[in-house]
Structures are given as structure tokens and as C-alpha cells.
Amino acid sequence: MRETSAERLSRLLALVPWLEQHDGVSISEAASHFGVSPQELEQDLWLTICCGLPGHGPDQLIDIQFWDEDGSIHVIDTQSLDRPLRLTAAESTALLVGLRLLSQVDGDHDRSALASVTAKLEQASDRPEESPAVVVEADHTEFMERISAAIKTHRAIELEYAGASRDEVTHRVVDPSEVVHYRGRPYVLAWCRSADAQRTFRLDRIRSLRVLEEPVIPRRIHQEIAPAVGVAVRVRVAPGSRWLLETLDVIDVVEDDLGNVDATFVVANPSWLVRLVLGQAGGVEVLDPPGVRTAVAVAADQALGRLLSNPS
Amino acid sequence: VATDRTERLLNLVLCLLGARRAVPRSALQASVPGYADAVSAEAFERMFERDKDELRSMGIPVETVVNAAGEVEGYLIDEGSYALPDIRLDASELATLGLAARMWSGAALGAHVTTALRKIEATTGASLGQPPFLVDHPAPGEAHLPLLWEAIRARHVVSFAYRARGRDAMETRVVEPWATVRWQGAWYVVGMSRERKAPRAFRLSRIHGSVTIKRDVFDMVEHREIATLIEQLADPPASGSACVSLPVDGGLALRARARPRSDGYWDVDYADEDAFLGLALEAGATCVEPSHLATRQAEALRRVRDLHEAPHA
Image 1 (spheres, rainbow over the protein chains, first blue to last red):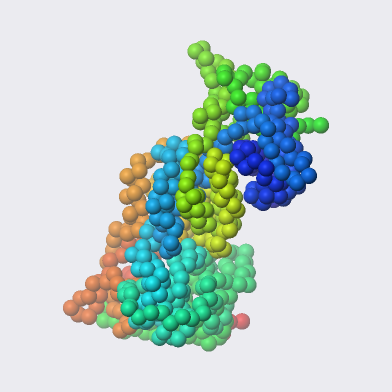
Image 2: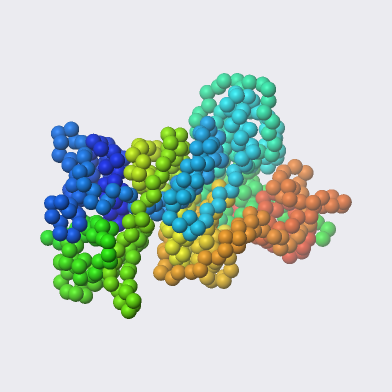
């Protein structure tokens, strides 16, 4: 996508004061810092040194030297551009929300630095009373802290977990390895002793949690959400149910003219999928495999039987 | 050769930023390279108006100075309102800021985070580096946030194509945006819906295409009202109550909200009938009362059964 004049101007306004603060930096370093190619950065510099105060005499132009053999850049005169433009709403909010999210994740980052840098950034932001209101829910902070503590001290934990795939509460002893964020939600990666396999637990599905005295059994844990193992299911999703697909890893997505979407994803436990399809009241149709398709029809028929046999 | 637009804009900024007094249009026309290219007075006016709007939309405070008679004397940029104030950060604060930048996926907010860090470095002389964006899956709809934040700050009405949950049709919504909220892993914008004339929350992932910032400006509501609205979003007031039978095991989500009765059935309050029905269907629960809910449940089950009975062609 071609850059707009405003985007390029934004970079130039940040570039000049930045170069002044980082005297002697090389063109390639500066370029990678600003996320552009060295050629683009050089073009930026050529454009900048043609600009200046009215009159545009030699003393009124921005003066930057960048023709040394080692490629280093030296700012001689910024004219009035020695300070960066204040942060835009998107810039300051992105950092402030990032800090807020960071305060909710596990890690040994400095909590007092987190508070002080947030305060300083809020102060530096344009008219704080007008800054966009952003609310971020507390993501199960209590469990998060205890899991982090367990990870740090290498303790196993006992979980009461309301799994999605079986719609029941299970008790397990797991060796936690890491808390990760995936599609906006926190998860704990762990070795589940009951299943004797790596499992991923969604923090908001944990009902209760106890850190055990028992140390973890060291194991190799994949540092990512384990790929689902199971049945590949193809579904047709009506527009009104499309939001469901957001949280799934879907492939082979095909959309028709009416907004229906066909997609395939891997289901670890088909009974979870059957319930999901029932809950969508016709908004989701299983196309394949035939066994799962039949299972949906049977489950719907049974539920209908229960409903019609009710005394009401 | 026509002057590059970026070059013209940069010269305009330098001219206004260095000025002690308002710079009249005539002086700008004479001294900013590029304006001389304008073929007529009208062409210059159009060029200048567009440039002024562009600078303002970037957050550059271009002030219009008006004299006692109400005539425009000229323009200037106040250095105090232009410049980012000094932010003094120690090593540990800088490291924390670098980590915070990584909480976003590069795809959605990377550019904004990068420019923010560069500006902060330019006041501190520190080096935070290019944030390695570790989150490779942006939360759905996250990419709409920067525009919405700009609109909220500028109090501009926005519009977007929206597909409500459970609705097949896409509708254009015009909204006075008040705040963005992250709730249960999803982002929402809350605000006054111009169609409904009532406050509503819109899930960003259900916005189709992009958000458009309109020219109309609105009056921001009190912070307190926003907080109340968000509470209702999290915990909406009940609009009805149903009596259900629950399966022996399973039905966790429903059971957690249900009150047991002496006859073995359960009472459940719900805020949204469609959402409740979906939950009951998913849980394998059977609605006993009210009867219209039992009817709707039966219709839904027949629909699912009929849809799946024949093999897929």
C-alpha cells in the first residue's frame, strides 16, 4: 500500500528530533528503527534538508549530514523541529492499553515501574480528560497470580476445570509451564498428569485452584497452544452465526453470495461440536463427516423427544 | 516540477511552528514552496484548506487567529501544544514500556506503537528498539481500535456495516462512540446508536469492512454513564425467567445460573431470550415454561434435525 503524505510527514516529524538525540546513528540502523528501507530513509533525509523556515536561505534550512563513508547521520540544525509531535490518541492509547494488559499477565516485569510509567504517559498525553475511555476487564487476576507463583516456584497445581469439550467439571493435577495470550484470552500451558499429555487450560474456565507442595515433573512443553488433534469437520455457517468462527482455527474458508461461509476446523471431541450446532438453532450445518452429521440429527431428535414428553 | 506534497506540508509546519505572530495567508502563499504552483487564488485557497485539515487530522494544533473585528489574521502552531512534553523514564520504566508495546499484534496496532516509541525515544535519547510483536493472532476486530480512539477523542460520529449476533443481514450503524471496552477476550465500542436512539455496545469483530469517521461532532456523556453502561453489558438485567429441566450431567453454564426447585426443575433468569435459548439448546436442557419458549425450542430442534437428516449432497 502506498504511503500517504500524512503518514510520511508523521515519520519525518519524529525522525528529525530522534536523529538529533541519537547522533552518529547509521542510515541502516535508523531505517530499521522506523520500519522503512535504507533507500526510503535516505529519500526522507534528502527531502528534509530541502525544508526550512521562510526565506529558505542556507541558515534557515534543516541541516543534516549523512554522506560520511560509514553512513552515519549528524543533525546540525533542526530549525524548530527539535521536539517530536505529541502522541496521537491512537498512539498513547495503544501504549496505555498495552501497559494495562501487561499488568494482568504473569511475568517478572517490574510492577512499580509499570505504575510509574503509566502515570507519566497519562500525564504526557494530550488533554487526559479527553482521552478515549478504555476499559479492560480484569482477566482472572487472582488465578493468574497464583499460577505465576506456582510456575516460578516449580509447583504442581490441582485444578477444578470446567472443560468446554465435555461440558463437565474435572479435577486434575497439572504441571504448569507458562501463561500465554491467544486471540485475546489468557491460557495456561501445562502437562496434565491425568491425561498424561500436554494440555491447554483457559483461565476463565478454571473453577478453583490449589498450588501443591509437590514439585513439577520437568517435561518438554511446546511453547504454544497445542494444535488440536481430532476430527476435521466441515461446516456451513449462516451469516448470523459467523461470529463463532472468530475463535476457531478455520481453513478452506469459502463464502457464497448470501454471506454463508463454509469452513473446516479440527474438533477434539465431536460431542462438543454437536452441542455447539444445537445451540445455533440451525445457523450451523455439519456437512462432513457423515457420522458427525448423523450425530447432530440424532441429538436434535432426542432433545425434541424429551421436550414433547414434558407434562406442560 | 510540482513540489512534493509532503515537502509542502513540512515547510508549512516549519513556517507556522517558528512564528511568533499569526502568519497571514498571503505570507504563506509567498513563502511556502509549492503554493506558488497554484494556478489561481481559488486553487491556492483549496490547497491551503486541504493542507490545514490534513495537519489538524494528524493532531498538529494549527490555530486560526482572529482579530477584534472577527477577521482571520492568520495562523500559527503553538510550540507548547505541538511538542510532546519531556517524559523522563528510568531503565526499568523503559523496559516496561517496551514490553507493553509487545502486547499488541504487529498487524493491528504495530504502526501506532512504533511511532509512539520513536517519539518517546526522541525526548529521552533512549533506544527501545523495534518491538518484536509476539502476539501473532490479533484479537478479532482489534484493527478498528486506532480509528475509533481518534474518533472518541475528537468527538466524531462514526459509521460502519454491522452484523448483529444471530442476524443474517448486515446493517449500517451510525454511532456516537464513547469508549472502547475489552470484555471476555473481545473488543467492543460502546456509544449512542443513532438508529436506536439508545446506548448500545458493538462487538468490533462483527464490523464488516472499515469504520468511517463522519464530520458531525457529538457531546460526550458523563464518565459515570459510560461506567453504568459497561456494567450492564457485563451483567445485563433479567428480562424474563424460565423453568427448565437439566440433564444429569453437563449443562454447566446453565446450572451455574439456575436455582433448584423442590420439584426437580430449575429456575433461570435471562436477559436475552435468544441467547438463553441457545444456551438451553447447547446444554441439552428442556424448557418447561413459559410455553412460547418451549415452542421456540421445539422449532429450533426440528430445524436442526431436518437440516441434518438427509446426507449432504
